[in-house]
Length: 372
Image (cartoon, rainbow, N blue to C red; front, top):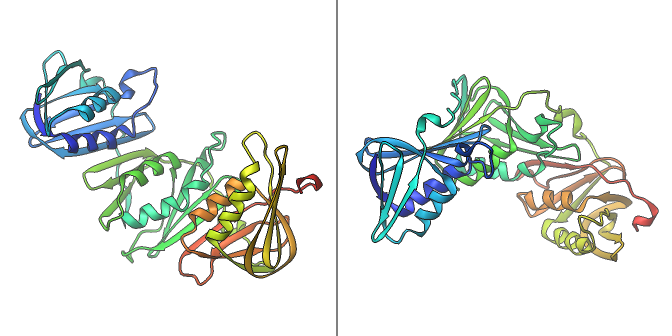
């Protein structure tokens, strides 16, 4: 194998593929990248047995072939290479020579036949969506994906399509995030599938804010995202997902209007005396045109006040500060409608004027007298 290519393009391709390598694995090949050179391009693959990424880039290929290299070492060599172009050569013993200007490295690789084979996605169904839209929808829901492996179905987000609408839902037992958008294709198939949150995190990092199309292909056990010259393959999560339509309250006693940034600033201030070791809820009292926020922990007490539109009749609710802040930060609009009924029922964050179709639901924390 022998090829020459642009250093910075190669480095970007390595970074993309390396998202699917294992950082530490008893199987060294799972920490590696498989390089295959043929025709006028090279293909780089990574697979940690959960998520696989395959991406291609142009190169001047003199001799085809393949090799597996340690992702971290290979990436650092290319990152620090001095020239604009690099030449990579491997012999029959998989000894790899990397040269750039006066810099030269010789490292040992492994045969590509030893690399685990990525799963094949049969392509039973598919849908298309703009990169920018998918990126936005993932960022505004993936924060609510569960990290509790004992409930694997909730470690992913539900994708549902009906008509020309795509709905993404994430839930972890304490909160729910729902985002709905219209697709350009009005003939989209009716689909329902769950994608691991870890795979969606990588998809979000790979895709851009442009209008290029992402194709999502469903197989019986796996799912593939095709983004330009890059493909990401992940397993599908199986199981019964929460019936979110019946879990979200359909009516509320109070509908209050808040400024997102002002409320975030107030929560951040009172949360300064909360830490991972010193857990304490943020107590919110919804009065007339204002929200009073208080916290208390072994570090001391804090209070703040935030303006709002409406009257909550002094309903008191306790919130986990992280859950509340993550929902507020993810909200795609500046003015939010805060819907609540009692201090023990879920709180909803929605759009004031239906400018964006989203719903965030946060379950309250039980308050005790000494929380104040």
